[in-house]
Image: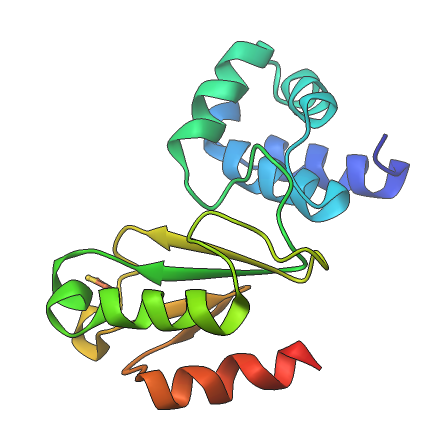
Amino acid sequence: MITTELKNELQTRIASAITNREAAVDVMKAFQAHYGWLTDEAVVEAAGLLGLSPLQVEELATFYEMIYRRPVGQQVIHVCDSISCWAMGGETLLGHLSGVLGIKPGETTPDGLFTLLPCCCLGNCGEAPTLMIGDTICGRVTVENASKIVTPLLF
Ligand code: FES
């Protein structure tokens, strides 16, 4: 269950939207921040707040790749695999991070710290290859500076 304070905050957000669906991503992200991922319980709770069915929330959740319908690590690293980043070495970057973290893309480290996910365009194509850790976008990421970005978070 979310707190009354968060519930009130989300009801205000929903009331300010033109349609309830417009507020759905914000609501799902808030539940995700609360639970760590969008649990089945969170889908039902979000649906109740939004006046949608759980199935409708599920449909929205599975459309947005930044909404996680399974447990993820404390830090989620998204590595763009769309065309600009792919052309600028995104695949090599993903493979390197996979090696550094000791996990395959899509997996979470055994200590629960990191999840590594390939993703669609992050809107930072001019600075490809791009990755995102949490809400932070990092552009022109090389194998060398990727280690500098990730390694301090490992300890
Ligand atoms: S293609 Fe990677 S950020 Fe757009």
